Length: 200
Image (cartoon, rainbow, N blue to C red; front, side):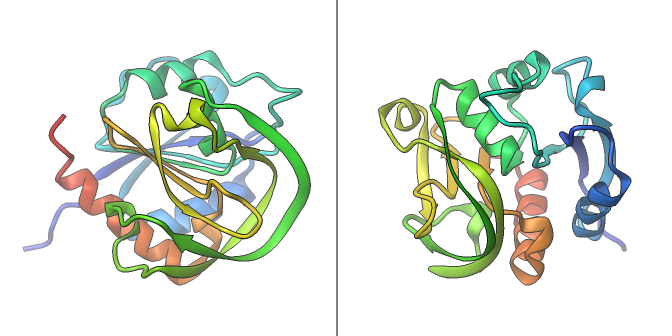
């Protein structure tokens, strides 16, 4: 008997719909999920029927481009498992009142150090290497820590992985869709979470 894949809503947050960028996410997630995707400006409701949600990165910047209200509402209202990536991670933290700051552009491999284990990080160990590409960072102050645990950090970024204290919401500053073995393990972890979501 073939196990059924969990369903996933992939929210594409690029400046404009980008088949080339979207392909990285589809190739990364399709072994584990049945995927439906929607461009962020076409996200019309916070009512998601899929088992879980992934929000992509983006070149949007917080000091120039406001986060679409429907995405903020989705982050605040959903009880579905969410994995938010790069800009999506920043938007998740911002939705709950955290501050975002701009620093020098980073585009390189980075070693992640795990502070506290988490289901989304299962089988990755205490250190792992991923791809980073961003200007902006989540600020690790009380506004973030009111709602989120910081699960991991790196030399260049003090907030690499966050987990909401009461809901199955995760954010990662790095790009698992471009991080090969690490990305595949995170996708498998998210699939397990989606099949057995935490009791709220």
